[in-house]
Length: 518
Image (cartoon, rainbow, N blue to C red):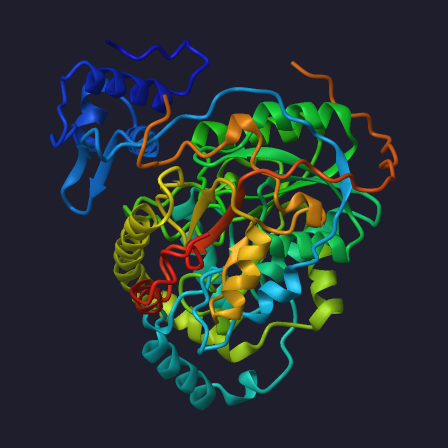
């Protein structure tokens, strides 16, 4: 059956639906391989990206499982437990930000004696430590004056040039002059949000959201509107459009590819539609794409920045998740807001350390970064499979989990579990996990995702045109937070870091108690 380009559904969804029907009809039987992405491209006259996205949808639905270098195979009935989300409405209100667990969550990071499963921090075996040590020494030896002198925004010309050249991998074209080097992606996000907001403004964020983003919003005295995010496709565009119609939104902030904590990845059609929506309402977007290079299949998803023609997207990324978090090297491509961001960078901390910038630039220019990515993508995928199997083996039968296609995190939902109590129990046993990120106060921490965005996840048992925004900002309403009805605990674990520690913890019974993956 040919795909209908006139239908509102994206082509990748139509292709996934068609393959799902063929699987249900027995065209492809359990254990059999479905056509490769190249074959699907030829058969249905679609792009390679569309074919890849269709395969990801099928895997998220629990119909197929990808095997490295072998293709996608139909899952046997006993293996399958995916359930697509059901449609329902969402409640969208402005709230003050309160991130009470952030400090406690961060205290577990960097302690080598504790399995750090609650933060997206890779183990040392997944960092390019020997190469970076050599390049750091080389920079200090050959360019000592630069390394020991003040730098100034926008940062090292060598690094900015190398980053700009890699932009084509993410679908955007910029020059070195468009890039501002920062001390990690978190600073890039902080500076970007600060450049486009002022205290009291309201920012729309995806829910669940990365807890470090909430720290930033709280420090800037901003209010938020939570927009439901699908655990496979990312932010709900219809809900976001509703928010933009109803509220004076100063900015939108989200993780576009392999989001922390859900692992979602927006499709290209949705990214384009998001940019069109923000253009209509004249609202800037702060895009965090720190995981984009970690696609397990090696096909890097495009950045939302790739669809930005107005300079409205402030793009943020770093090398913390791919090379080393200790380098503290990130960058922003702030578009029309570059002057404001460079000024803020100068005010906040003058500049990023020079030696790490020069080392990373050399690593990029010599091809070391691409070789490193090819190695760690495979290792992350293997470790995700190990953790996924441990979750399915040790946690209760009605546990639900995502099936991300890249990044660092696995999102797990355990019905009836108090995530905060589990966090304290795990910490007492020396294990660092993350309950559902501290969104808008303690009462929100135990709230499950909205019904339409419950995880379309793998379970061991299958269950039976809008007007533009007014140019005049409306003041955000004030008011106390109201407790939410407690629901199934939703927590996360790193999917691809510290594998040896996870195996050790699993063997001593911690995983079966739910302290490792929660």
